[in-house]
Image (cartoon, rainbow, N blue to C red; front, side):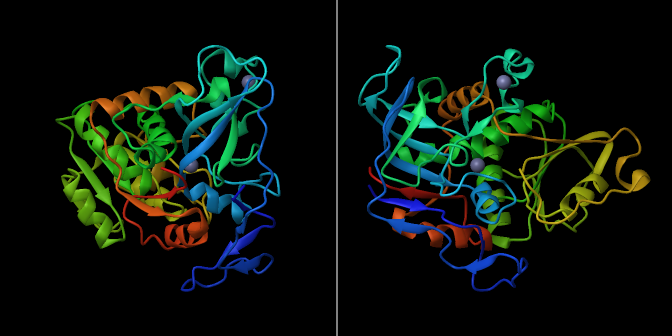
Length: 351
Ligand SMILES: [Zn+2]
Ligand SMILES: [Zn+2]
């Protein structure tokens, strides 16, 4: 089958950013496109999925550049939508051949530890991420555990549903961890794949809240206004009022201290990224004093994905999507790193 393979770590060379990691190779095409990757076979309690679309996530860049450790060689991609092609042994009646399903970052968890037993399977010590410990969706076929797949609501095209599986669902987890409530002032730092989906949901869930969006990109600020932001500015601009809740979607460390500066007393910041590219430094009085809190979001639980797919379908949430072919995956990764995309990058593999 056709697939995009990560055979060695590399820093992604976008063509216009300086090299930062001299110990790594510096490549414009970090993934190798092959025609002869072996088609996977579904194991016990697994299903074989014919991939229709797969979202490209910033975490994929963290994997390629070695900030998130995964197996190698690897097929990346953890926002997969496709149709079930075959069932492995032990698969229950719940799913059938031809059904359209999604696969998210949570590929498997142990089911027995104290985290798994209390709905915090995203914190499981044995957590296996899709497109990291398990091969993902940058390919014509993939396999997934039957207990870790989701029915995709009819209202979505496959390429529209793909970004909901990570950008949307992990963002939704961040919103839950922020303990957001209607009337509280909410700030988004960065306005890429996750934030532009989440604002559509937040606008509906918290109609009387003001939402402020901080972004360096004028295109992203413009999109934020169109999707209902009450105020937009550069991250260094002073907002009209301080924030009660904030979510940081950016890969840079400085955003954390900046967000804490504009957080009101008792406010909470949730950092919605797996890795920061540079260190975070906080001053106790300037950034934390007065009961301001900072929290991170790790992974995603099945419940987050299920709830989010259903909310997104009921509110007709539509991600802005830039489509690429599987062969163009390296271009998609460069565009994502350059932050020139509006919304989400999605590989349209078969539709
Ligand atoms: Zn992701
Ligand atoms: Zn566990």
